Length: 197
Length: 197
Image (cartoon, each protein chain N blue to C red):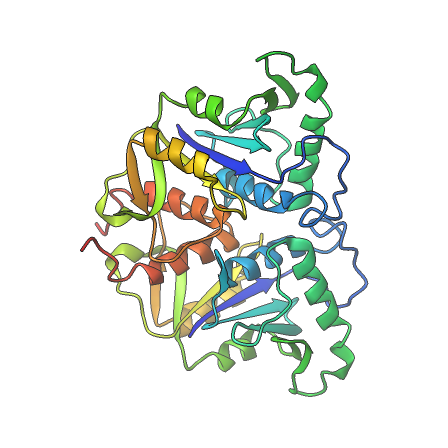
């Protein structure tokens, strides 16, 4: 299982945003949508062994479960519609119980730190510019990657990550957008042992 | 200079499409928009040494020039608006002359084969499932990668590529969307020589 936690600092927590302005009034929801797409899509298939957690404004977390996903398409707008559909069910997410808003998409009241608690079974990989180059670090089993949207991690988030990370890795010499980092992380994991024969 | 040629088989050649239905009536323009984003964006910068050619329905080619680009944003909708702006100038693209519709974006009447002719100075890399794994192939100078949208290459396109390619490379064991392949190709080039020190 590969997991990706993506922090949306400005992301909406109510469904009253327009699908026509994802990069503006919807708090750069376009970034989160592309992260979902990068995490799940292969050329003609969905990666079923993937789970994505979008942490919205440290108050709600949407979880996308690859093995159950049905209505996911690669474009930003349709993914944003799935997120909006989940937010329409936010009032039903009582206590710590998740609510499934469409197949494979659920919402619960949970911020960043409890989301980290929830993925503690995996190997937390801290993507960091001072980390070990990925080419020199064997991919871990059940990796959990934590990424931030268009903002840097806050000091508190960075401290939590530093404290809990099992490994600190750098995917390449240049800092990338979160969705591109997810694509490179997949390639890093996919190509383990992939050599000429 | 890194170049990417992306073939849009169903892409519009007139500007009368809606930005609200890129994945539908606009012929999967969402794919081409993501390819542009993947080709140019770093975390806080634009890759200036990149040129992207979008071949629309084998009749027009839009060229994005990294060193001149100004109004590019990472979301699909705003990139689609740049493409629409270029198509609004298509009548001004007479003969083989390009027309610049916004800084760094130009349109000309040119199909796939003449676009390949135009990039012949570079090293044409054919991304192919039977190619040499990228990890075993030193990145070429001035590479040109050719990708297809949500459709496979036509037989004619595949024949042209096979005939002209300087190298046949596979980026990983799993077939990816074109925009994800661009991200991985950049990482392949970026990480050349990137090791622990």
